[in-house]
Image 1 (spheres, rainbow, N blue to C red):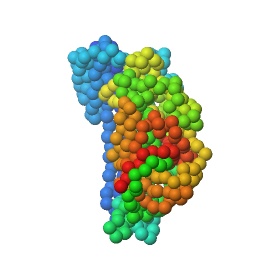
Image 2: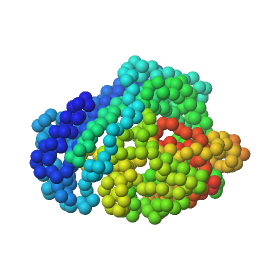
Image 3: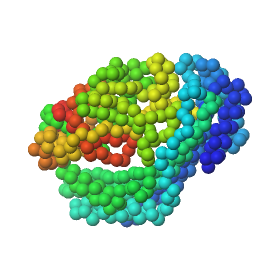
Image 4: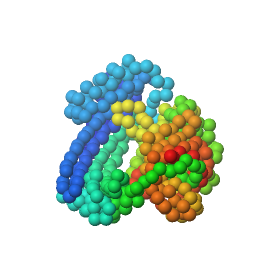
Length: 445
């Protein structure tokens, strides 16, 4: 398939140039997936999907336009090139559009170990899903299943541009997860567990996932409201990463250039507690967001986003770098048929000294957040509030489940007092341990 993607990219670029494009880039993607879902011991569905897309962006002077197609026939690719060139000629000027200089492009991309040669098998996926569900239902108190599923996916991408860049890479993914349900009187709760990996052999044991889901569900059964107070709040690792996602959005060059970031004047300043270090590493072997070059063909490298609590850099693609008078940081995200976006890669907030139990002991009495609902965030000021469910702990020990709570604060204040644990979740490209905020406003009953 890669040869077909390569040929399509070359065809789009050559056709666009022949029609008058001064610069152009093209990206072609191929995706395949297989998923199996079960419930209460019975197979519910098997879904297999395949999709392809070819995108072209054309620049004529300071005008640009783009579009994409799922048809890889030569006639369709030629028609796409004709349409995009015509669109570019009619577009409004964009002073920041353009490709990187040829001398800045990535060379000799490395293999990042993203591909598993193991073939997806429906029977195996079904067996894993059934085993996971059975393990949850074996736990006393678990009364029902919300369903269990296993999946496989594979993708390939090829990117090329008229500045001479041409490269590609591919990756696989495996996943397994389920939700469990418990009922007691008028109380009903559900929770879940899952795992995902580039390689099938690295998936967590199916029974372990099932037991985790069941135990988490039982821990939440019988939840009550909490009196309003100011108290320590710990965001469990599976929800803590959402706090850091606001930071990543705020340091996007596009947000900074538009002046719609609560961190717009914080470059080189203390933002987090002095113990905090945050790293972005696109070259991590087997990482979920690993890539050998960015969405414009520029080289990528590991870099500190935050060192000793100090903000070190914006995330920049070529256009946002021009707007801010800086150089691209290699954070362009590919957008077939459109202008590149901006995105981080494998982001890790480095660990603190304690596991979750240690954070609870350090906090004494407080709230452990295990689920968040309907967050409200002001990207200009950093004001934040979110509905949560969780567990109330005293003297470091969980004493009861609680729900129908709202916690609120300002993200700058929260970041400045943030205390990380060392318990990573391991399922996503944003790796974040549980996070303790020593005091937050909690609105309850």
